[in-house]
Image 1 (cartoon, rainbow, N blue to C red):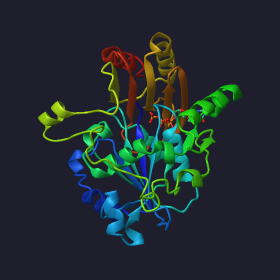
Image 2 (image 1 turned 180 degrees about the horizontal axis):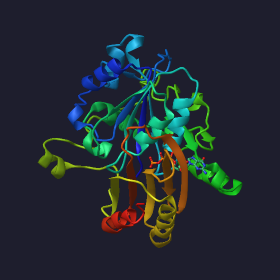
Image 3 (image 1 turned 180 degrees about the vertical axis):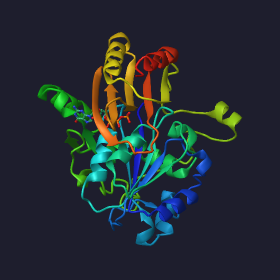
Image 4 (image 1 turned 90 degrees about the horizontal axis):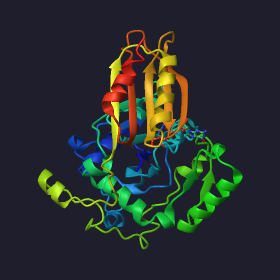
Length: 345
Ligand SMILES: Nc1nc2c(ncn2[C@@H]2O[C@H](COP(=O)(O)OP(=O)(O)OP(=O)(O)O)[C@@H](O)[C@H]2O)c(=O)[nH]1
């Protein structure tokens, strides 16, 4: 389980819109928290991967589109809290001269990552919020299906793996982990990183799924037997096949509440929570409005690790709305809401 970020570079809002339309990604199927960021520069890259006029690989070479209509895409995936947003922010703030649109899927009803990414991007970026849900279960478009299928079927050939948070483990552990990954996927280049600091060349424009280059190697199975089959809602439930398991005890609780919080109370509450429920709490994150500060307070929790820092300043007329998301097993929503309210100043 984990959230996924799709980076679609070298596109314009218009191109992306056309791309999504062409791939039958009807906006009504969009996950609620998907957002797209468009930065200003337009970069001509050689790592064209998908044609905006057709995402079927067998048609791509036949209807060879002009270079300007081709859109390279990068999928960032990893376990909850593994550092995807941190890497994404590193990409968005690096001087690579590319235009990047971000499609983001979040597990949880409230968009926290959107706020975190937005707070790092420039004021001129356009942020488009659309619907939410588990991306793989709610989006019926070929784009996402295609990206996931390619990522799944060819991961041994084309992945680039970033091992994040390397500062929190010993050299021995790191060596052991690298060996294990190499055992699973001996061909994927691996980079070690702290706070997403990897070379842009390693994550962008690598041409890993360049369909022209790998045409002979890639076979996309259109039967979707291992992926999802979608039809009517009823059919959807009857025929739904997963390539992953949804643990029904795992859920998310989202709290959205206007008001000011006492930061000391929040600290105590979260620490208590970790002490009592640490094993079941996979991920916590939030954007908080705290007394005595005109800045947002960003908190992040991954299992028993808790971190917090001041973020973007609240606007003069902005409603100071707290947003928190908890993801874990057997979450007690009533208790979480009560705990939160106990921190209100
Ligand atoms: N110590 C340390 N912390 C890191 C590093 N990279 C990211 N973090 C922290 O780990 C926490 C989670 O990072 P995110 O980038 O939000 O993780 P994510 O994979 O996007 O999380 P989800 O989308 O919720 O699955 C944040 O508090 C980050 O600041 C790192 O290299 N070292």
